[in-house]
Length: 123
Image (spheres, rainbow, N blue to C red):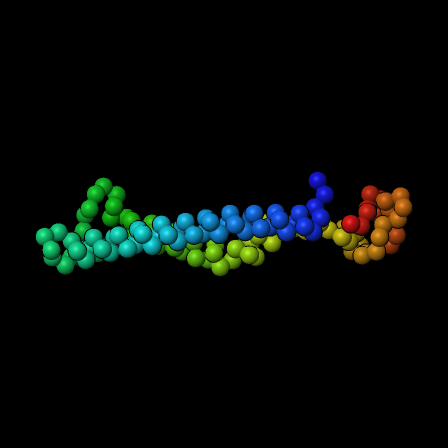
């Protein structure tokens, strides 16, 4: 499959959208987990202000703040680095000879005119 510049940009756009959707989901879920945990801790039981770390709401719910912080720790950098990641994942096709990095067109027989590598055709 030959990738022309338009196809590379279209593929990068799809990858960028997927990365940003995952980042958005992680950030939203992390904010929900942290906020819910703090709200349960502050509101507590019997209208008393409770410690956000010590209130038991349900089985496994005491770990929500840690899961939320972990999701935020992954989601925020993922959102920030998404454009660079999409460029790293979808690389444009090489236009130079892999052996000598000659940028000129390959010969008529598919041989690099600089170093003689066979099978080289510049795109």
